[in-house]
Structure formats: C-alpha cells, structure tokens
Image 1 (cartoon, rainbow, N blue to C red):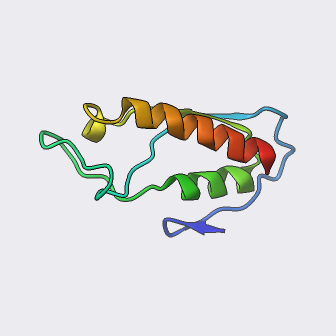
Image 2: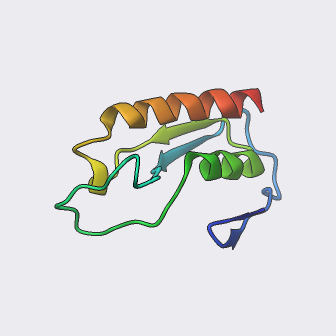
Image 3: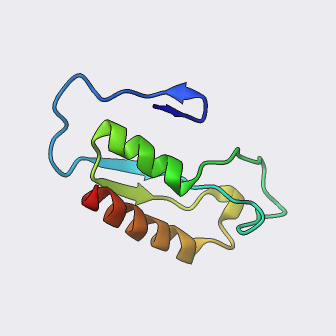
Length: 93
C-alpha cells in the first residue's frame, strides 16, 4: 500500500493485540481546518483516511492523536474527535 508516496507493507512479525501508534498528527483539508497564521512550518496533507489505511496495513488497533503546532490554537476538539473516530474505525476493521 502506498501512502504519501511511501510503500507500506505488513510487519514480518505478529503485531500484539491492542498495539498502539503513540504519536500521530492529522492535517487537512486546509480549507476546512486552516493553519495558524503564526506557524513556523506548513505540513503537507496527512488525512485521517490515510492514517487509518496505514494502521490497517500495520495491524495497529489504537492511536494517540496529538495536536500539531501549526494548528494548536484551533484544533483541540478536532484532535479528540479524530482519535475517537480512528479508534472506532480500526477496531471495526
């Protein structure tokens, strides 16, 4: 599976049940979730759908969604919603 130009394959070992990605960021779409005007950098797109696809390939069941600096002033509630949605989607896959 190719995500953001990188090919990902399932690990060559059995992933433990309940495995967790302990630090992720979700960006975009910028039109709906604009970046902070005072940001130091502008990240590329990293959608929730791409994150879920990656976690599915890697066999991960849980995720910790962190608030990225470029959006820190406007996204706390979205980060919580993304984490809850990601967990529900991965758990039901």
